[in-house]
Length: 444
Image 1 (tube, rainbow, N blue to C red):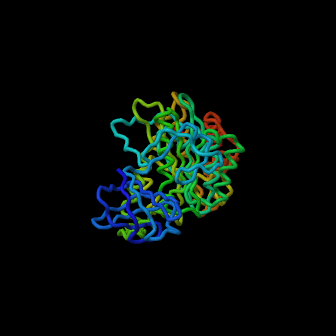
Image 2: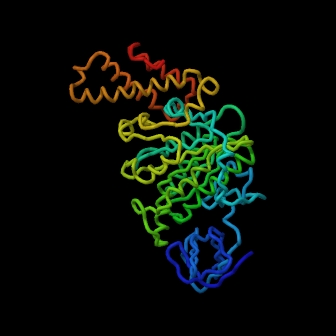
Image 3: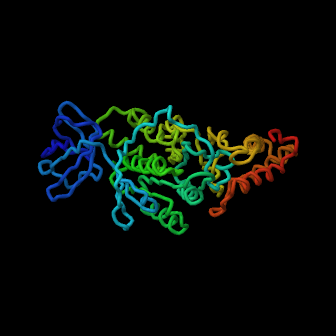
């Protein structure tokens, strides 16, 4: 049932306030019609006894209190869906912006989705090959997993994101698709991704949603929900294996904090709202596999750690909800190593269940264990060398230094278009381990 209301009580940033009508629901879709006929979409974010708060996704510029007709649609925010979304580019609210016209779609879904019943979840198996040795060999991405990338300000995570999208592939059943949600990005960044997808020919398997830095910050709150609604349709209606990449979740959290402040909510850690955890969980937990469905949703959220602080609320909360993390190293980045993945701070908690003889190779786990063990020893030897000097190290310790330098230069460091198969990755790891004496190889 539609409810119409004339005039507003107050406007504050992207929020408008009206006297609370009867039979209005939380998260209900709202259409604000201006005097010139322009319509703006919003939804109910707070219901008090006297005043209802609405967030407007295109902002409130040009809105006048007495000249607005507010229509409550009697349903939550919905999104139109179609198989023809593949290869298309949309803005943060799901409107096409690629010049190819409107989306011809008959299906419409609630962008908030329904939580997956834990009893209906199927345990993630098999892997997604990214072509990046550090990820495929040491922190393997499993279908249905949530594996975030923790970056730092100025580190080239956009290039890593582009490589994962360009190079990722699956083995086995089902078509593969990528849903890419870009939040708070500069125009140059969005254009970099768009040109790369077009030139490399992967755009046909990508659905891109972009919210730019000059777009309404409140629109940023819609982007991951819109992207995941599309992913759920592709995975569970069309039986596709879907990889969702969301960047940058820090921009999303900053927008959430901004709106929380305008709503005069009591802040929690670092000024973020107390519901940051549950809000992130509502996004991350939309990844997974469902019993009886052939498709899957794998999620890579990417975030920038403020001041490289992994204990900051954004990476801290993300780490609790997800199944591991890939941490980028400023030290490796400054050495010119790309992608600068700190393998000792990174892990994939589901890796053991998606590798091995059935999916990759029977010795994959042992090679991975040996690499972690040996590279960990490298850090100890490097610390010792700073105290004693390299000349006073033992022969074995010098071999570890050689292994560490070669490992970073040849295994972690990988040219932008050097896409390695899982066999190439594991063979390279074994070749590098030959630098060390046989007595030091204890895991193979």
